[in-house]
Image (cartoon, rainbow, N blue to C red; front, side, top):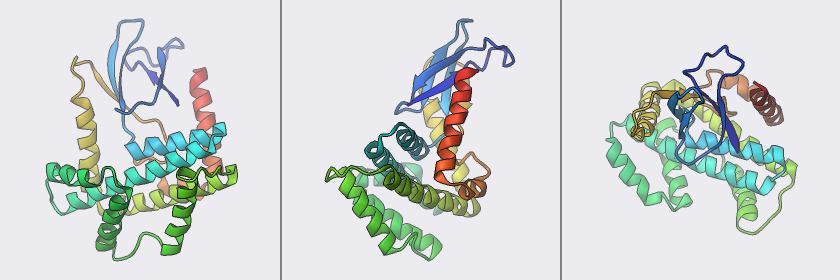
Length: 244
């Protein structure tokens, strides 16, 4: 999936402002050089789970529904991990210890889910969703990813929308109850990326305006929209970026 990076040192009002088309990468940062010789180290503000969900939304639009289900699932798993780290920070556990503990479930989605489930229960005194909801989504996901089921567009959208709403609703709780820890964790993730700027180029952070975004201050408005509306808005926005 392609994104567009602008040179932030060029005249922002110039119709010839440099723009580079790149693919999303694993690292979440890029080095670019414009024709005017400006070099920039660009960091995407989005968390991993936000990027993975956006990739899934693109797959829906492009007609790759199995790939969409896989990306939505990966997004949810990364969100579980993000929440586990956040809950631990709430209890003043050092980040290096949190990262060491996370290595125990890196290759086990079941361990990851269990960690999230019980920490969520401890923090909020309730379960994040019902057993029937989880079973239904889990059976669908396993059918697609492990048994070769070919989902319809409607099934992929329904699955993605369920995950979208769950993450957005949970983000609202996180913003309300973990404002300090949330800021610290996001800053820590951005700082880790900035450390890779070995050439000391000017650092720029960019927000892509993803469907799921902690940087978006209007999560409640996002919840009022349908997933299909969000996908259409995403494509309009990106088509506009291509033209400018």
